[in-house]
Each structure stands twice: as C-alpha cells, then as structure tokens.
Length: 65
Image (cartoon, rainbow, N blue to C red):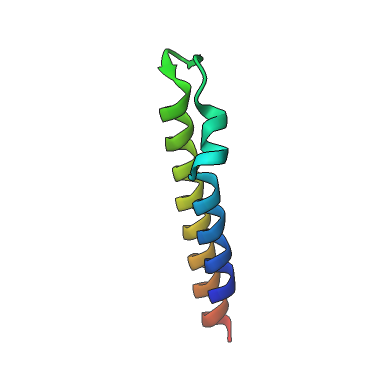
C-alpha cells in the first residue's frame, strides 16, 4: 500500500511541477476560464480521486481478510 501511495505522490509531484506544468501555460480558455488554472484544478481533483480510491480499496481489502 505504501508503494502505491508513494507512486501517487511522485506522479502528482511530477504533474504539478514546472516542466509539465508549462505545457498548460498557453493563451487558451475552457468555457471562458484560462487553461492553466482549469488544468491545475482538474489534475488536483484527479489526484484526490485516485487517493480516495486507493484508500477505500485498501479498507475493503482489509475487511475481507
């Protein structure tokens, strides 16, 4: 479990760090919102969803044992 959480942390760190984050810094809007903040919020939400899924999956597995 700790390895998956560490992998998720590393993925989030890489996605929200400068080199890849610079890809979203262009002059485009999504439904009237700038792309960079929209992408940040979306990536953040995906990471939180993945974390919640991992934690719930672990809890159900522990209860089954």
